[in-house]
Length: 197
Image (cartoon, rainbow, N blue to C red; front, side, top):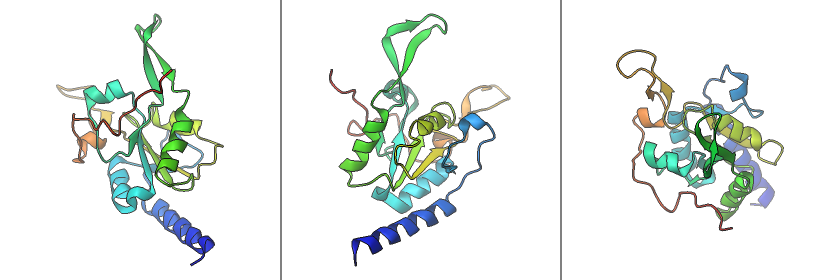
């Protein structure tokens, strides 16, 4: 088979995947992307089971956050979109300053290349809750050659419950609350280590 035919068959397979995995489009325009590709955590898991190494599932949370909230080894790699700078205090918000990872897109491209993949394959982005970092991270990838970028709409921890003793706890949907595999044990090979300066 020629390379062109193989690439065409792969593209058809990815298009069929996009039609199978399609969570509801978020109502908040800030959580929408130009690709309009949305999956919930269960769909992201099913997608990974189906495509395996022919896609890239990225956890974009800060590694320190992951350490305290948990991780799934189903993820291919942790590439944080934003990280806390523990050397700078944000006096306005009374927290450490959170800064954009300046190498975010380049690190995704390198992760694809290391796996022998191109920007044609599905890239799935998961943050804590789906909207606070997932969609903004995806918007950062616009016009950089990626063809299929999905956001996990309910994220790793899911949404907050509105009533009861645990009101405001993230116990609604999300990877962690959907019966999917996860642990507090982190896989060092998949965790993010900032480049040496």
